[in-house]
Image (cartoon, rainbow, N blue to C red; front, side):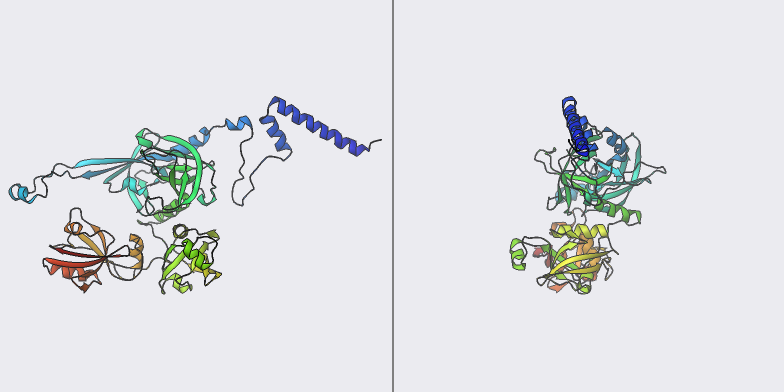
Length: 493
């Protein structure tokens, strides 16, 4: 006779087999899914601490789910940004010495208004809006239009050209629907995302896709090098719009596309939300420019040849090429030739990744670096400082009759070097901007040029440039440092 417990077990197995067969016969989607859930057999991706478990859809019913509830929740936080600037119209005869001798400066017509359209995201109930810097660059007037049709004047609170981000504040005393920030570091390639914006000015548009890649560098837009890549359709007008995850959180600001035709080819880029959150935090604190922490070191990528010489399996990390002994890196014992492999446990593949990680921490924070030094790995704790202003900038517009007329020059300091994204260290005088049509522009000067010498005399301060510019003369020789390259100019003025 069969043992009673064994008989009960066999009967239970037979019953489960029949139930599974019935489920397959009736509905291969929902019934089987419910059965698998009841047995604890639902297919799931391995759980990662701090992240939501992911799985593929089970059954036809899940394939027919809609993004509509998510869109209704998030779309009111995405706005249109209208930027306008007035441009003086110039006649073809303007600047011609012959016509100006007889008619004077009568060739300028009435100003013409140029307008641009982009998108933005409300990130604070008080009316803070994030958009791309290129959307509002050079604008005299910026207006924000909500999804419900209302429009508000706004002021630019903070802008950062390197990250291509700008923070606006709407001129209104009411509460606005704000999108919460998600943690962009928790995104995985393949995650579903939605892009919301106003492409080509047709009105608010939703597109869906996946995260195609992470930490994209050297994509040729701005100086920022840590983009999220997505195949969600992004087109002109989407710039500054939202990239959201399936929890309705902001995980990126759409900023650029790769395109041969001007339309979407399925390769779009977004600035990670952790970077956006760092910029917004400084704007809330009253800053008008985004300040990155100061390490006091310059970096370059690790090439395959360098990796082989260092004993690395593959090229990765940020190679230190110069260290300021008085900066945080020098104080921590870092030296030229060391390679930063990780920061707070996050691997560093490229110097751009290091810059991104430092920027999201911000000045005043403490970070732990994993460094390869003289063939051995070691941990280094560094307190991230604000870039010091070792001497007043003394920004001055050069006037008079010289090749420098129309240029604004300033004394260099680590803080100004960071603001202008200039490599290296040391003192000097830098051109920060040049007036349109100024003699300095025609003489070949560009913003960011460091003036090294003029007529054989070294330039150390702004006063040196002013004195030499006032001295006059027709023959001019000057030496410039442009992004590490030495340029010698000779001209008759």
